[in-house]
Length: 627
Image (cartoon, rainbow, N blue to C red; front, side, top):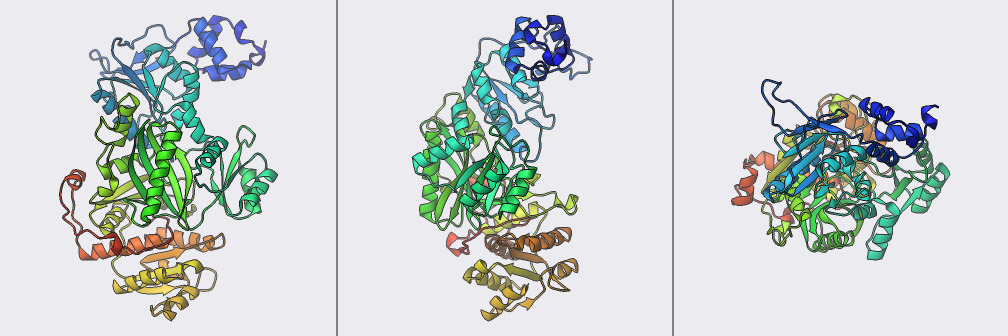
């Protein structure tokens, strides 16, 4: 009988054992035998075919190793000693590092381990990435170097019998198995799998937002090419299209017409009722905000509201952001805080929560809610001086925010400004598209802190290897909606700082007619020498280009690549340009003091702070690899 037709209950125990010894997973065997993974698991347990755990010999056999570092095998002798009597908790790590899920989640896992240690609870880590701190043998009480699959996690839970498992520190990877773990008798600590699923499921979450009367962009779900075009037309272009349950914004695109949607659907993988494509109205030219919070089931600690310098639609992992937010009406900030609290309670969050907002024409929209650790948790924790992941872990094992002394924290009392800047690998990959979008592209991030907004921006840019120029020529090209007093104010400030201006025909005419001297240069397709030629010749030191709509993206691609190749700072929104002006002012003053994070949270400022009233009141948002 062929393996495909073999019934699991008729498979001899020696055949099943041999298959496990050769490395076949329960899921692989289920596929071969036309049954379910849990059926194979039940048969394996009936036959008492169970993995054992060996200790990694970190002493090279010179003497006995006592490191709590284990891996599974289908051998006979078990070297993992189970400690009974005390409380123990398993933390699931983030798995392999890749763009979209990386070291930020490892930070949360390690802080979770520290919190459990402080609470007198044995910590057990399951992770399979050797490039993380959580897999250092001396980080946790016990480490299992295993894949984050349902089979492997259940095997360890059967062996260790933990009091609970934390799934919300490792990003999306452990969340995918949370519901199955619970269904197999594993206690999930923190937010329940039901709450996680409610936030992840588009239809259910949309119904919740409507019930709570929370504004959100129009959206739809598509199961075929024709269905996708129809949904997009009903929503209105431009639209953001993406597969369901993606990580790091993978395979997301912004489409401006039906042809683009059709082309996307042809490339989409495995589109079906079980794997639909999600379609959202894309809010072009909007502000975006991120909120990281901790809820204990009753009270909510809002760690920080971060304002993105990038335009809405840029993946949060790629965006520069500022905490506290610097350009938001007080009433809108209060609405963001109130909505976060409302969502935390509606989802019955216990632990970390991340909410992404967009604001357009002073209307605040909810874009996404993640009842788990986000990649901004380390940044926010350092900015506010409160280790949010530690607080969350303690909340998950029964402590309250009031007991931990953080219930009444208000990030608006901070006396310093923190800026997160992404680091990109574009210079290593010639001619890849450089325009940022919903798919995460960054491979790292840096942080700049100062008591002045301009100082924080300047430090972040220096740290990212993208220091702003203090003299030379600024190229400016803005879309028609940006030809306003804000652009004029920014242009005048560049001139006052000693820069000369060069612009495309329409922008140059606008600037000159309003008393700001500017020379004219060709666009990429208008003639030679054009703006790209001038960048290559070293005649432009800073680019301010604010595209809007599909057609303007072509010029931005050419200009952006020229800027990257020749290490010229490249700015694509007025918010970023305003931030750059403040940073250059601070650099020219030479007043960039260095202090440790601890000093920022304890001491008075060494640098003269800037008042928010002095910041340029910009009304649109930002992008690529500069500010």
